[in-house]
Length: 98
Image (tube, rainbow, N blue to C red; front, side, top):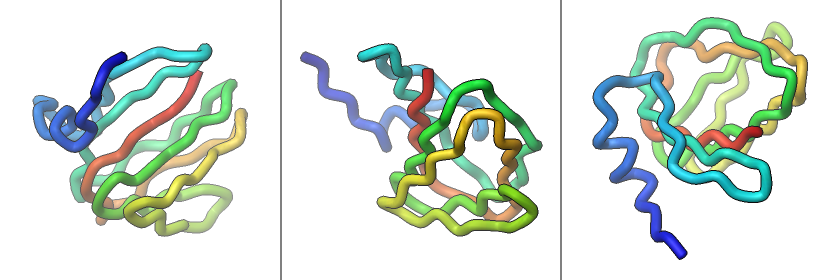
């Protein structure tokens, strides 16, 4: 078994918006990243992606709308759905994908 301190791991990352894989299990990857107030460009994956805000907030642009995802909230982006992050986001983001 391994203990992972998510906020500590994110705080040690050298730059914002660059994820780091912390663990792999059951075919999934657990990644963490630091968000800063800059925007993050549109992307799309062929797999669903779970976006869990550990602290702070993420302003997720999806389907032409901006959804505020707050601390302790999880947004699951379905496979094939384009999404981006609007300026003004900040904090720690945990990503669960395959």
